[in-house]
Image (cartoon, rainbow, N blue to C red; front, side, top):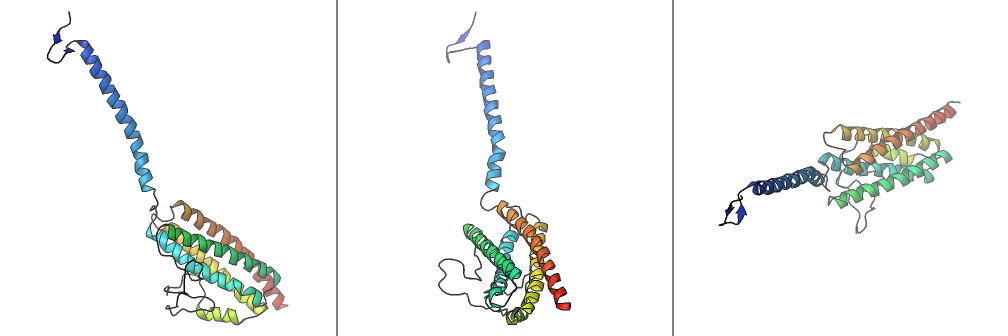
Length: 234
């Protein structure tokens, strides 16, 4: 015969234990489900818009300046008597690196970070950035960026290139741009060698594309330089 506790109105026999077991089982299941979701939530928070390190920001800013010099050099080709195949290459380099500068500027702005604008490509810029670096070069203002990135031509080298015409321009351009591209490869290598850097998906993809694209262009320019040197020695 079942005994009742009339003060609470619940049976003291096995049905009470069964109910308790059911409740405990439900609590365990809910807790397990929440526990399984916790790492995902934590990971989502970690992989938010700030999933980058300072080395990533420094890379993007430096590469903007680096690319800008390559654009200036390449834009001189039509007015400096470059040969037809070099004209095609220069146009391709100028277009692709302008696009990449725009992408890097947008990435920095989307993350509420200051973006260099050496070619004055950003919208809403009322006046040119004045060159306070002491590293002035024809056709490009470096603004507040006194450091020369690896592979970049010095002001004297830029002036020599700007003064050259015809085959001499071709030769100086190819030598300079090969060195310039090798500098970009070095920048990419240093990015990926920095702990925690180059892991943000956009930066990782972009840096990898730079490495592949500029290696291919170096090979093409070396072949062009070889033909130029051969023709001059005949």
